[in-house]
Length: 312
Image 1 (cartoon, helix red, strand yellow):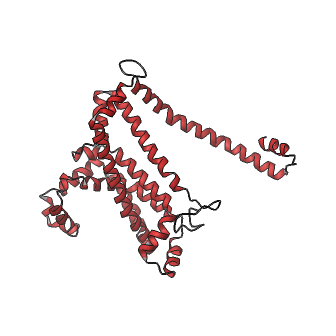
Image 2 (cartoon, rainbow, N blue to C red; image 1 turned 45 degrees about the vertical axis):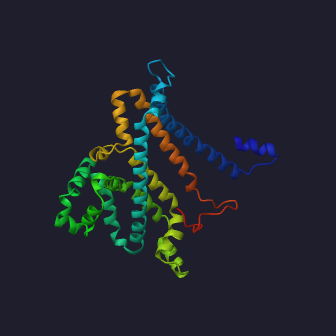
Image 3 (cartoon, one colour; image 1 turned 30 degrees about the vertical axis):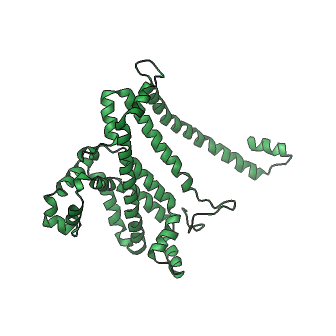
């Protein structure tokens, strides 16, 4: 109906096929918009209820004393910065490990792809408490001298144990977080690589004299950039909400602080939950512009991005 009114205002006679197509498109948008509204209500109503509960302190609704107490607590800033540091370190390590590995497997070792898919699903089968207990048991001072551990790690575990006191630094916890976030990050990066023709792009770059690393950084990476950002976001969110491993490693993180606060002051815990959601939302909104290829209306694309090499 809107299309017909628009044509009448312009003084044009609409073509029957075009009008039918426009009406069909407008009719198909209505269920999508309705579904979007329902999803937003499903997400925002519990969040609004949590915010109302957090602001309803001893002085009634709208009491901002709990909010001032949250920001005035030094443990809040300490745990938040600790979790942000662990999340950033884990995200960087996951991207640096997975991107070259998945690219190399898809390019030169396609027969290993099913094995890599199975290994990426293993963290789902291993509970975090089992993973944390196993890492603490195997990488303590006594176990690092074991010949079996030295053999399986190609000598890296004894070397790192002599250089770094692993249990006193978050390095071991970051490695545990990498394992936990592996399935989410791997699937995001692998799906992006599936959507492009890796072999053709690599051969084209090699014919122009680019080496393996240059091809990865300047040709492949710009074309899978949305998948990289998705993997980074999923890893960051996983680490920011993880509780079990941090408890086992005696690291005072934001989820532990949130859990302890909820046992003593539920109103402050509700405000902390809303703040955690808003922090994750800001990270998502910050990554959204970087996922859009700027190739329309004369805008430039990312360096190395090839038109038509994106998702199909």
